[in-house]
Amino acid sequence: EVADFDVIVVPIGGGGLSAGLVIARNYLQTQAKIIGAEPLPGNDAARSFRSGQLLSNEQEPATIADGARTLSLGHLNWEILQKGLADVIEVADETIMEALRRYFLYVNLKVEPTGALALGALLAQPKLFYGKRVCCVVSGGNVDPAVYARAILEN
Image (cartoon, rainbow, N blue to C red; front, side, top):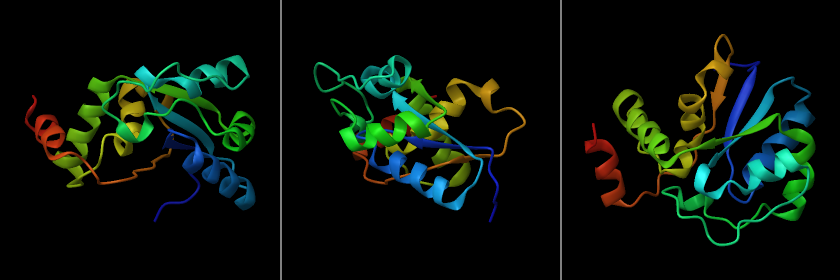
C-alpha cells in the first residue's frame, strides 16, 4: 500500500465518484490534489470548472468512454467539485484507448474505456505529474469485446 499521494486522478462522468473522493479526502484531511479526467468529446466538467458555472453538453457525447457519455455533472456533485478539484484534464479517445491497452499489456487488467481515463490523463499531460506520487483511480471492467479487441490489437 502507498499513502500520502500528491495527486489522485479520477474519471468524471456525472461526477459521483469524483465528488465522493473529494469528500473522503476532506474527511481524512489529506493534502492530495484531485484531478478529474474526462473524455475530450464530452468535456462539460472541464468547461464548467474553467468557467465557474455548471455547463452542459448539447447532446450525448460521441466518445469511446461510454460511462462518461453524460450531458452534465449532477448539481450536487458540481457544488462539491467546483471547490474540491484542482483541475480537469480532457483526454482524446485515442489516448483513452492507449491507456486501456497499457493496462492490459503492463498490469494485466481488463479496464473499460471510462476506467482508463485517469491513466489517459497522465499520458495526455505527463509533465504535470513528473516527480509526483500519483494515484490513478481505475473503475469498471465492463467493456464491449469488439472495442477491447480493437484496443489491444492496434499498434
